Image (cartoon, rainbow, N blue to C red):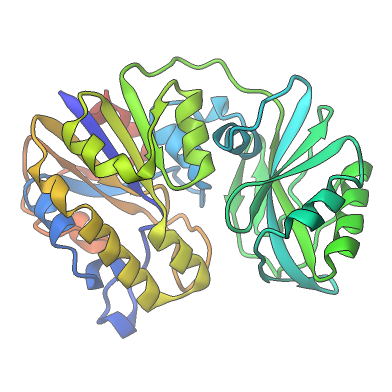
Length: 347
């Protein structure tokens, strides 16, 4: 049977008194998600048990690939941004952030074209590619093992985990990179670049046949390309879900953004917006539909966490759960899963 997998980025959260001891998902009006939960089977999933994962690595695991094969955030995101991957070059995910002294402040939008030109004249071995919103890719001509300078993510071998941080700048363990950052700060005045997920090699992985991917963010597009999926434009998502004869993988960003901002009501509204966006897929036929999230982003923490996320599978059996939410799905027949367990429902 054809499969459709929908990942709602950062959907998971914790309960809040302000929401009547409900999570943002449970407080939101979600007739579409509840429709599928009521007619499917549900459970709770730890995308990668014991850590607060980044989006790329958790989805890599959910799609059935071993954690040891994950190539790192930088090169996956570069692939998704249509940056040509060059041999013996290192790719690193960057965030533009405001700073004052050594203190990291809020995220900053991508600088102007003129400033980006100045940045790319600092060092011939380093090039900055803007991607989306506050994000960029730093390409380094050479193979390096760069530790994260983003203090909110700790690098563990080939992946990073989100963590609490006092938010102070971290020096790079590479002279070229550190010199570049200092000169970039001088050019941008009140902005810096936080780096994480350096990587210089794409792994050899088994390609997925008859899959298409549509996503809001470069990392998911890059992940799809790595795994052999054909990409489609976000505006075609609902049509593809309903009418394509291919398996479909979709990532939707909304709720994660408000989790990072700590905006509780904003997250509730973002979830409701996603639910309205998906309302027409209730007419889906001859398909196994899987809806879940890549990680929790609790508004209280303003970062990814290791809290589990809800999961529903529609298109076969049903259980007694009739609403889609963290506490509701705990009672579902799927029980407690890990991300690596989901592949048995996808393939």
